[in-house]
Length: 316
Length: 275
Image (tube, rainbow over all chains, first blue to last red; front, side, top):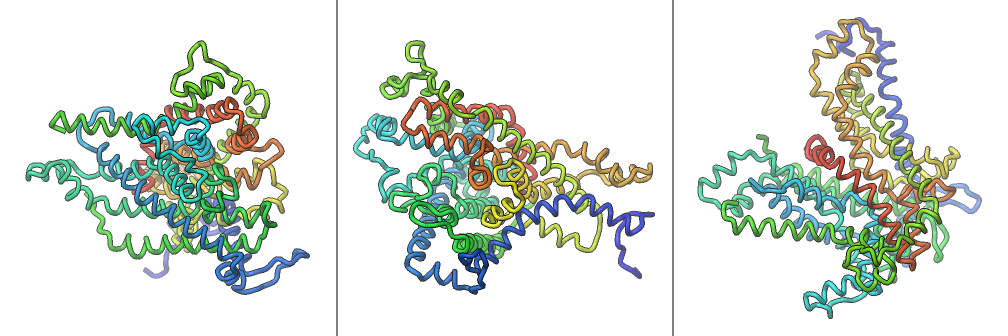
């Protein structure tokens, strides 16, 4: 091999080849770079500047981050939003993904009738806009309509009912569970697919060896689908730390009562656009967006380097 | 599943969960056709001739610009799907077919967007869109959504292009077809099933998104239906007939589309994307 081959198209000049490349790649690269990568980098850049009253930008180094993390007017809301977001994520991990796994396990049982009907119907809420879901649940949980109360009373549990969305200690949990209700279809479908990919012979061998369906699931199937569960976890993480719509739809930008449902996305929106309590702030908005970026990046790194690497992938 | 008892239990659990998933949606649609008194007194009763009242729907369709919002949503979604598919397929083809120096690096660059949400760049996106004089236009939304959806689209389409037999393009080249014609006349038609998958993937988040319509096109009759419903609901929050009708108006078309495309969607979710 004397000289590395530039391309494999026989009888085409380099200039013509690059014209072809340009034609096919330029539109995607231009749109993607302009509206996705550039804004992302520009936002990170902005977080190192302070916008002056005359509109000019003053380089301030990491001062915005120091302010965000230590100045009490900023650090209070920031850590509140951060921990709330962590709670939001843990509720998804502890409720949404186990339920998704259980449903997937049931759906993938051999010779199950109406399999695709169940699958289609359970996935339905996932298709709807978060705005619609938010309002629907607001109506259902509203003490005015009393549907939730009637439901609890039917089981003799009427005393448990309260205006959950309006109480500081329960608002975030309630919203998280509504989000779980909506998105349980995603882990279900992903895990279900992974389970279907396991060859029947493996399960047959296990049952011949005397394992029942439960044991076959825990000892044979579950170890094989860990990579999918890892993927589901990182998707949940990225989506949760990027969430905004549901809380905005149900609680507005103030994420009340008393910011008890505030998460990173709503904090970012409020700081950037301003609200009745404060003016919009581009620099601090960018700083919060950059923090969100760092948090999401940390999650993705943990997944790529710690989780995914240790997982054994099986191919059949 | 050999014992009928356990089969019964499995169906019991699945049916119960299905009911939990559907009940809120059914409740809203059912009550949207009823008179106010019936909504509150007998919420669980289906609409009957004696309690039907369509006043909510009159309000939704008479009072606001629902029709325009629907058209806006359709335009944005169709535009996004078109450009995502066209640009995505072109880039996927170049990246898988041609060898050039920056190939791997470029593929990596284009895949950043799969994991990093574009929303984090919102501050600069608004700045950029306002510099381009595109605030309150559907064009802005189409551009941003196309940028957002290109990475996954390129990823999925690349996988499919790799599966197309090499002989087909070589035969085309032997027959003297240009690279452009090979792509548009041989490759693109073969990509149709994959493009359907990408289209369904792109459609749902774009149709349902609240964030970018709120930021980029919040007024001036350029609202999408999701944002329009949100604004309408905020305005009529105490008018239960109107709220229920608005919710149903937004739910029903999506559910109809879902029922039609569910096979395609589930097949898409269960194949290319996440293997």
